[in-house]
Length: 331
Image (cartoon, rainbow, N blue to C red):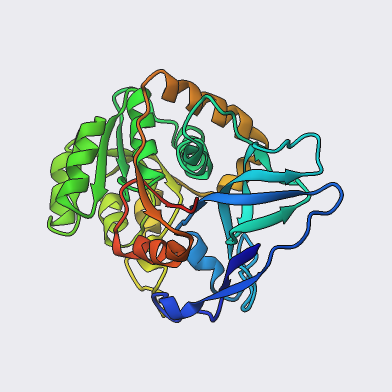
């Protein structure tokens, strides 16, 4: 069978473009002992992957130029030499952007067939949902009646954070980049939602949080974060999850220095990566699944169809084209 692969053609300067990706077509490798052949069904595109396109030390190795790009993938076992993964099984794992993948089974998690749509294991019940779960509940630890602000609230992580904060009895404020996204957040139960592209952010946040901010889940950084720092209450907690507002900056941004504000309010600021909690992922998945099945968590996907459209869907992340999880349906 013909097998398409998407490789990193070059490292981007500033915002990535289609020229940074290259398609390659080869023959599918034959199945060998103790391996399975996977057919890609769904591919996850995520903001963190932009950092992996750069060279340099980070919490995860960069993609190599001329090599396949890899990320979250849901795939079906179409041939198998492993008793633990029979034909027809659905699995999720960190896999290359290929139509067919030969795997020894290591790092693959079999997906239950009856608990949620398979693509949810790339979103609500996968890395984004777990990022929201541990970042909010372990670092921020919101209490009933406290005020929680979530930036990037209509993204795959942010919309779960807001709903989890509501489950814990908090008052929740979210920022998003369109009136449609603001309306969706209010539909999910957010108490306040702000369009950061049209509002005066400092004024809008101050009006939405008259009693200050106790918890801040930071997905974006930049001007929104600067405004939140002015509203922090004593012993506030900040989970530093992402900085998408500056991912494509050619030079490091220069902004206010927040240390004095954090000191005066005794604020805890903690950066984290979801892999920090790897040993606790089963616990997080079980709880998220339970809340989803009880109707306490809703989830949204922006689905693009076709393997060739994976780079387009990825680039759309930086234009704000997705609400919830950006997914590519391959087959």
